[in-house]
View (cartoon, rainbow, N blue to C red):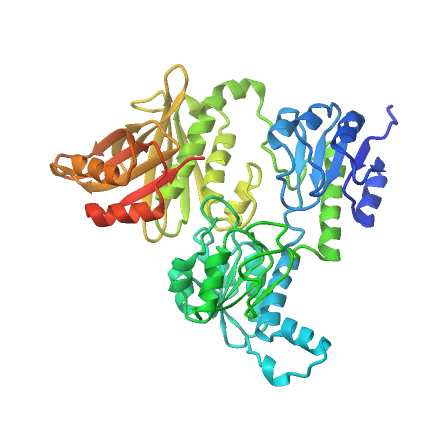
Length: 532
């Protein structure tokens, strides 16, 4: 019997309770502030590594981790871990995504109350030797409406807590079911404009990605009710700080409370000089309880994995058996591309998704392909950190119904993959396959319009009436935008009916350029898709 204890290395500090959990099973060593060189030298001797944000296990360090089974990040973000290197090495990476939900929700409410009661200014004034009671008259939140954008775990907690303070709540999240809203009696907004029209306060709880960076700019602020107060304890960069400052100065926005910024650490911002704005230095997750909770969640997962079990919050992709990897890996890029295409083209709220596999591919375990597809669909709007392993749970918690269909029959292709989505306002179906010796992904149908095109980084899809001159008009209008069309693909059901054109473009089309195209061409149904 082997009595040698497995070894755990902790480099960024961990709560005492978490260390005690680990010491009951393993040999635990703490090396705070360890250099990358020293870590690379030490890591071959350890079975587990627990870090926070300071330690950065890159490919070189992980490549040396010959006995490593698990890396635990005591927090949410895992940007400091080379996930690809860890996955290739067979190392499970875990995090603690539920550790700070309560803390962030409470900080959001604390900022809101501090702002409307003008507490920071009053505190500073009094400590400065002044008694200026009349200067700091505030406002009540009772009876006011809070608009929540992103109704995930944190958004839901904020809603629950402010209802107890007498506020009304309206929330926007196209991937959360009606049932979840009804549980708290919350109004589900069909579109962002519903929030803008109703809310006295707007609290942002969105992930930071290519779709949300710079999302709240001057155009969005001008759509909001005059005097709206903005709260952001989610991610920096979602709000354009310069535009927010301008909107506050001219009275369109009543004020703001911010915990996150476009660039961090942040000691200078256009909003810092405004009395209507209060700021904290990214304190959303900084409580004793949250730090302790994160450490305990990680410690328990390390114990589970080193004892041969399965972790609760794995971040990297599950291992695929070697015999299946050869068959399924050619479909990886197709699954990702189809998920991205689908979510960029679908309009309105999404309730159901059916993912179909037809032909030879249907004979295999396609769960990894389904997860890849869903991850691309869910990551655009989910406030949670979506990954290959947790995407099913994220979709389920959002109330999204997922169906997988498999059929050995595929009339025109050896292998065919389909996505069908349904919501109260719209439906969308797309199909794709892989072709040739290099297994090139291809989109072959959009809503029963046959369209054979290879995905590219920048694409546009236009639906129009199939009459003479349309193709030339579209080419001319893109020329005016100084965008070169690399390839053009047209699909139609019948002559002189509706048609769909897919364009591979050499450069990105911005939202402003798309609006210019609509005005100039008269063609309103255009969707821009960028694959990254």
